[in-house]
Length: 180
Image: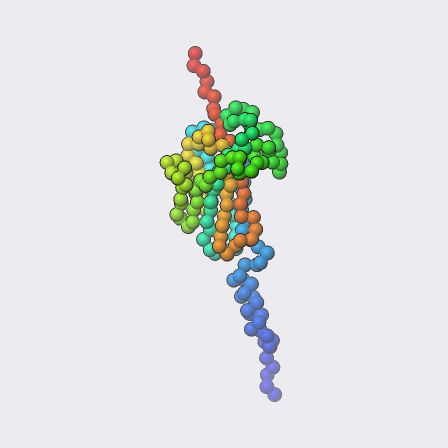
């Protein structure tokens, strides 16, 4: 009597399914971009890092792009006046942030693909870089840097999920003591 095989007839199918599941990302997953803080404060002429992190199952090179959006034209306050926080709670949108892009300045700050960082023309003469994979570092912040910064991550084979997150940057002045 010939010995019976202990391997099921469709073992090749199980091997394919097992290997296939570890090679290809699940269809329900996607890139997830997040920032640690929704609001960040910086002192005028000091440097600041706007952190951005992302997760993905892709092995493709990500393109990280930071976009600046100024406050809405009707904000009524300027940074450094001390009255900056008009009391909106986490999850709510302040009126000076919620307007169409037609009524504010919108411009790309920088992007990175692999190790190649590109600054937009407006920021070419500034100390700005993308560090730690996706964090935006601005050296010597200026008054005009106050606004909303969007971290956007694009990966060619991972188009699902939440691919952007934003952080509000407020540039503040430090009042020096008066010498008498």
